[in-house]
Length: 95
Image (cartoon, rainbow, N blue to C red; front, side, top):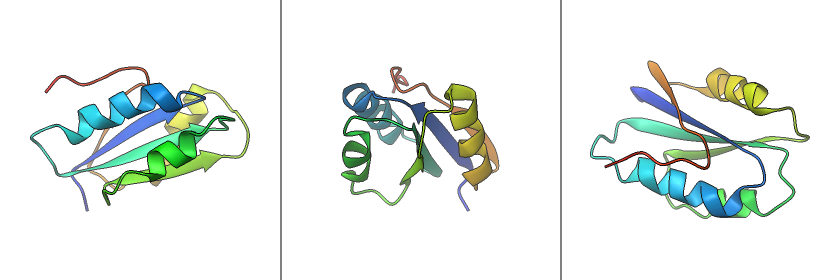
């Protein structure tokens, strides 16, 4: 069980979400899972996220757009970590 669950809600941000994901994977702390919750995107977000060859990166999909709060709640429901951290899909964590 990971200590931290990082939840990234996203909607049609396939290009931006890579920066967010990369910034999490670049952290020196590595006891985490990264849950990317796609809120019904119509772009290639799924392909971008599932292209990561890292077992900590998990893709969760809403069939239709429900809004960022619903995507965050879905991430919480799937989180296995002791703590939950949120990161917007157009943001990055510093090293």
